[in-house]
Image (cartoon, rainbow, N blue to C red; front, top):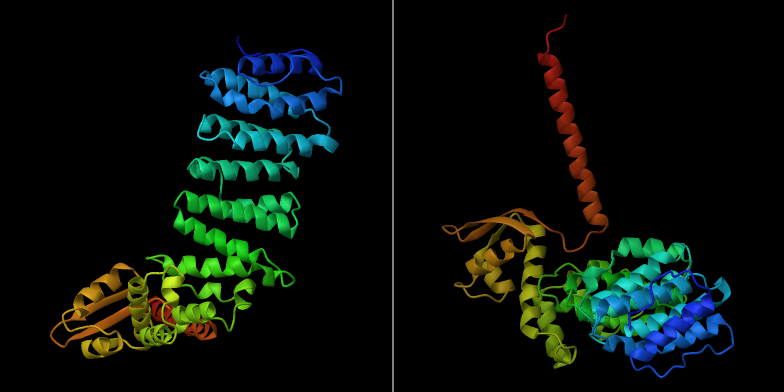
Length: 376
């Protein structure tokens, strides 16, 4: 039996009878007759029985069936639309690995068929994110965090729903091994908490710190310290560890590990990676304060052997956090530029002073050019 066509010119009750007949062919336990409780109640029965359609071998037939269901969902009165949409989203998400592209397409059609300001879009988008994470298809939907923030304002979401949506995005990014995007989602998640509920974000804050410290190519984490949920962790070991990665030295890290044996391992972090990152970060601090650094100083402060210094410097330069040249004869490194580990009042003052010097130099150049220009 072929599926009934989408948007057929029949009363709602007759359309649902056709949908019931199709579901019977897929093995669904559903009556071919309507219940008499109204077409919306009958539509809910159809949606509840849709899980059998994923067993079909004819994807086009299934798409036609689901598109017909959508045509009815779109005319459900506003007062009842939430329940119907939630039920449909649940059934589509629970389809396992079957027809994942079709299921995402159906949810996308549902999303676009609802008014852009409607809070119903929140439920549909959450379902899309969950399905995309389960099927490693997060790249198939729009997950731009700036746009997501705009949508949340448009849908007038409360804090609980904002947190829920951002957490779903985070889980999807992690399931799809998108660590960098997951890091950004974690920060947005923590920012969504307010002064009133920041203390409830303890687990999210802890997880955020561990995730950032575990990333091999992520060195600068000072932005985490200003997040309210992370401030609530002050005085705890995890916050002390984060502070070391923000402004501490390799020596501070080694002393922390000595005082708290097995703590790094319990967090699931690699001690060797942490040492490597702290070497880089300690060198950044040295480079910010010195234009030249002797090899002997590096060996002492970074716990390196003489043979390891040059290869370490090459690795540092590859991070693009430092621009430097090696003077092998004088056994030193000359710093041309280095990234600051933190950007606070002192760095703003340095930037202001540099811009002032640029302005003065440009003024001098302009005056010199004016003097060279012959007067008429």
